[in-house]
Every structure is written in structure tokens, then in C-alpha cells.
Image 1 (cartoon, one colour):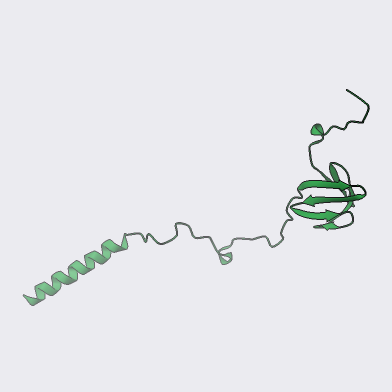
Image 2: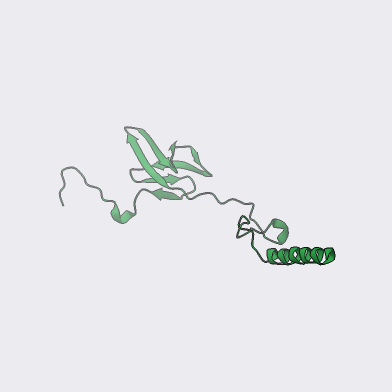
Length: 116
């Protein structure tokens, strides 16, 4: 009789273990990112963020700009680009590249005394 009880307990324990093997752990992340050793190639070279001209301030001869939320003046480096000129709607770098506040189609200039 004792052998039958032990057999029934062991059988019940074994069947519960088999059922538990099919259950998923709810705390386990759904996705695990592959590691470098699994063949994923990561780029070590960082590309600089694009330059965004936020504003231009001209006060007499003093000119400054806000690019990517930081203030700069003529001659200063923005990343690898040195500011050569600050115009009313554009910044020109020593490399010849430039960034504008607006698309040229939105910019218009008026001269005092002249009417359309």
C-alpha cells in the first residue's frame, strides 16, 4: 500500500513537471537582442547629427547664430565646420557648405521706399 502511494505521488509530481515545462515565464523579455559574438556588426564610427539653424541674431556689427540649440559666432567651429559668414537668413561655412533658416522660396526682401 505504501508503495502505491509513493508511486502515485511520484507520478503526479512528474506530470506536473511536464506540464510546467510548457508554460512560458511571464517575466522573461519577449525579445533578446543578439550579442556581438552572434555575428551582429555594429558601426563604431558615429555620424554627426545634421546641423539645424535655429535662429540668427544681428545687432549692429555683432552677429551670432543658434545651431542645434547652441550659440556660435563667426570663426567658431560647429562640429567640423568653421563659421565663415552669418547673413540675415543663412550661415556659410569655410568649406563652402551653408545652412538656411528658410527654404529660399519663403524668403523675400524689401527695400525701404520701394513698393511692389
